[in-house]
Length: 173
Image (tube, rainbow, N blue to C red):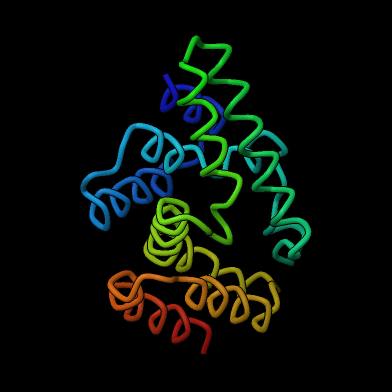
């Protein structure tokens, strides 16, 4: 149900970032439960609902906006899951995971954060790097790449991300 819902919000956009986030969760933590996998696929629901466009604004979200993004995303997913008849424990856990997916905290929140970064570098960074061709500030892209790499907490995830990160930086030159 979640995949269908998120894909309906995506419209004509690709679900690849969400799919790869789930892939990296499973890779980093093969014991991932249903809540973590649902959170992986739906962690950016707030952006889909709000339809904020980073490309048009020529800036990435501030710390305050990221905090709001996490909290609202968790709340939106909890509401959706409860409406669909999900167990309240599952809905609360998904909400809790999404509400910290940018900064981490618990082991599972960190796994989600790290998987999000890995997927970002694999899927979104090449797209974002191309934005310099339409006037997106190169320094904002570099800051985003640095932030996404430096927030990774797992040594294993950092090692996997490093070639993607270096490639993303090369694309800015």
